[in-house]
Image 1 (cartoon, rainbow, N blue to C red):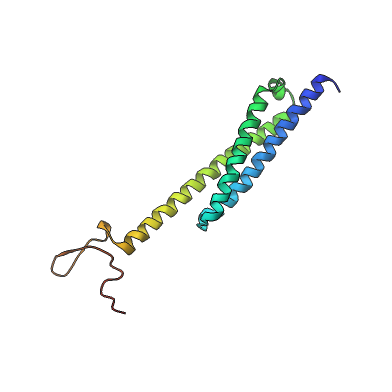
Image 2 (cartoon, helix red, strand yellow):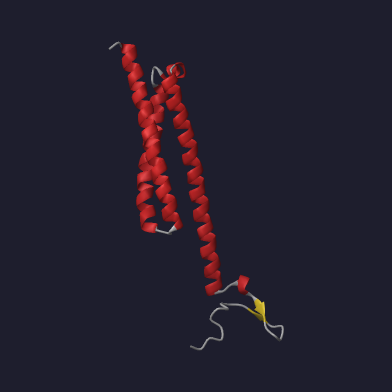
Length: 146
């Protein structure tokens, strides 16, 4: 095998490693979204560790690819162009999925805060009684004796 073939096969290996790592990340993000929807905190903590490891691996792979002597020749190989395109597409999917997870978690936070305000009371629960007097506090438990 010539030196050029060795370099090409190693760049192929790096590209395939990057694609596989991104596939793992996408799978993890799908599971993370389910955990956020189900408010499963212990699973989220474990997943965040795995996610961090995958992100570090993706960053390292990217640096290895960009500093590889044959990186510029990727555009000359149809196979490598295809793999690079798949990597770019999968990366965009992962970024979108991560944004969806963030927004879902944020929405859960808002809903929990609204329920908390309803149960505990606060300025949002201010009402007026029949005599025009201002009343605030938890309205769900007022007047309940049993």
